[in-house]
Length: 148
Image 1 (cartoon, rainbow, N blue to C red):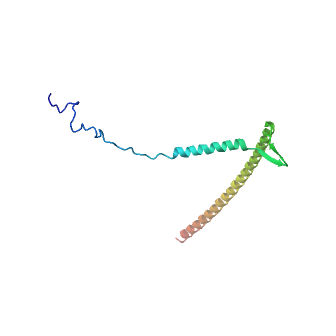
Image 2 (image 1 turned 90 degrees about the vertical axis):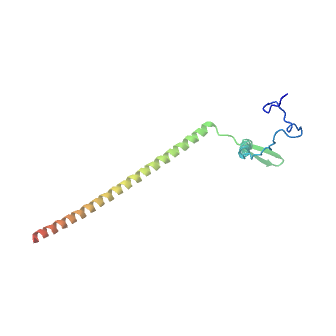
Image 3 (image 1 turned 60 degrees about the vertical axis):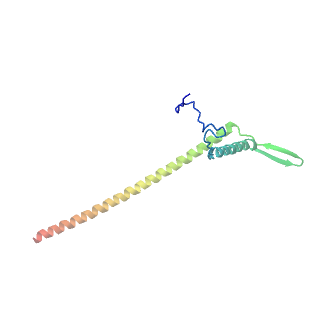
């Protein structure tokens, strides 16, 4: 039997110690987990608890008279009454909105009229000032020509 250093099945006498570890052991590294799943879980639990409390604790009032306890439950208004109330509220809101729009339109028209009047006055003042300056310039020019 000949010695072959490239034989893959060769056993190295130095590495044949059974007590020696075969590979280098790397201890696992603990990573910090994200707190987001915990926060979301708490929020969902709180929302569920709130929903359950609202469903089972609403509209029941207990009154004690003597030795007995009576529970009074308020009844919902029929759909027709609710629809009538809603329609009346919508009509009132529409009337208020229309009145507010009319007031805003009147105010805008008054503001536009005031601005137009102020613009006309400014134009008249500028025209009068320009005419006076032109007249003065013409008179001065005539005097200079007359003296020449």
